[in-house]
Image (tube, rainbow, N blue to C red; front, top):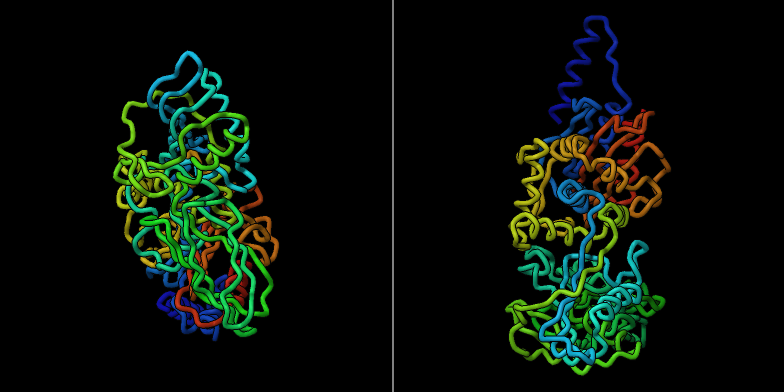
Length: 489
């Protein structure tokens, strides 16, 4: 409230001198919201900077708050700055052993993950799995391979460490938005479960749709609950063993739906589907499918060790994913946690040679130093904002957005941000001058981004955080939209 007190004192001084205090629309709206029932008990703040980087308004600007998915602005902006908008993730194909004169590969075929998060995805920017597999089969044909005597092995081990950040809520790690990333994935490391209500008190009807994961045992411990009780289904799973439990309740009056849940074995899934594609296309594959585990051993679908992975692989070629500018666009428009975590871990691997979270954050901080940003007001622990250990001040976030304008990748960064009406900004009033990212969790709603001038360049960089709100999200959203509209006047 300090800033508002100073504003009121200045207004009183001007009036005592016979002058009229001129308040902007944003300042008037800020005063109204500060005393409103919607936000008066919340922790919230806002900072808006003009085209020269000077503060237009600041309220609780230095207070540290949880940014939720607004952290994706930092992750995506840093990735574009490090790799460049045209960068493409590469996936390699290699083999152990030798290729005989008859075209038999006497050894194993390895799929070497390079961090492409779009493999097998149904995302509009991704290549269909069949098209990706066609590219890989073309590499085999060019090498003279007609038959594979060994196994198809998915290798996502180049990214060390846990799939998820340790601070994520345990229930979240079984969901599509908390699946975690590795350097070889498939279908964004998710599985689709078709669920429907049965009799009250009986288990929910559940059927796995896609992708198939024959090694995974899912025990159904869910229950159909009374009408009006909603959906609290969660899949509890881990990459430690091929076992999962569906828990929670599903109201008997709810319609059937597809629940997207986590698949912790993306590399194994990729190997399985490529093998199936080869066989359906007439190729002979004598061995099975497997993946390289954390200890460097080959693990089959029975999860028994098949010995160490080969260290003497012969390359066959590489396929490329979509341009990074397209991935960051999807990441920010849809607020895709999987893409964000993949970008963070890719930066760690590129910068430090290690993709564990601590190394990844070193890579981010190198970018911030390059942009001239101090760390005061900034604490980031993951790439997506799913952790409640992220803390950022509105002042820092607005400063980051202003500093990003100096990056060679800024045009791509600005293009990655949705307008109201797109993605997670659906339902907001249309405004072609706004480019911003939302962030929301229970009790949290944030908006950060830019207001464009008549020349299409940022006239204002802003950040609005609300934490610990007890009002409905619709009420908080309405209040923040009022402030955004006032900032645009």
